[in-house]
Image 1 (tube, rainbow over the protein chains, first blue to last red):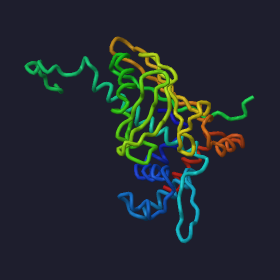
Image 2: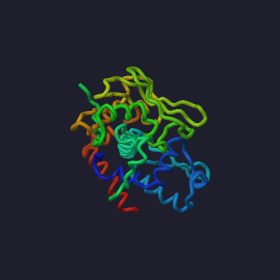
Image 3: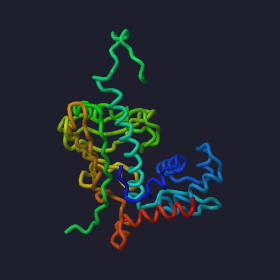
Image 4: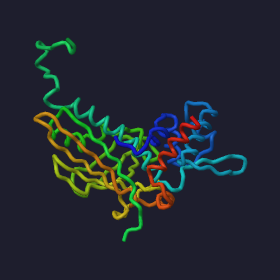
Length: 120
Length: 160
């Protein structure tokens, strides 16, 4: 998959960061809400939010004593970045699935006698 | 006169050790088996991804709670060589039913020998999606998309 620069991979290549990003795509959250939903510590959540914020994908606002994070309103930037990662994973998955299911390569259930070891 | 700066398409290509007919069949009919389920728009986790195999067919996710969330529509259906379908989730992460505000995905399938095929995918026309005002401003203000992404990369390196 071609990307224009390493930005997309750098920002959303980390699984935790991608998870945070996708939670925020559903609705704005506080750090505590994200921490409750994810198997990582609150400081780790904060650090990932900082990276997403510095990368321009996420903004925050104060709400009482809490800080609420949400995806940046110019969401097409965020959406395209997200989709770049989606397509990379999707095409890899497509290739595996297509080759695993090709009719000519599926084992013949009546052909056990001629089984050969996979590696010689 | 079009004053909207185009956003670059996302492109990808895969070579497959399968005939082109099989590649097309898996890409369209088996999309649920290869589309990564962690990527979704609906509030609920994905139970199934469905692409209806005809012009005008829906492309959508069905959640584990049976809710459905539209992603787009099939525009061109030419098995086994070409399919064009839309992505109509906009910058506010909502489905936009207006077809003039749809981004497009084109997948082309070609033979590369008897049992080999190549699939080229292009996801384009992001500038049609609502919610891109700020990015347009950034592009018009100089530097363009590539610079913006370089900025992302730099900030990630600086703060990682």
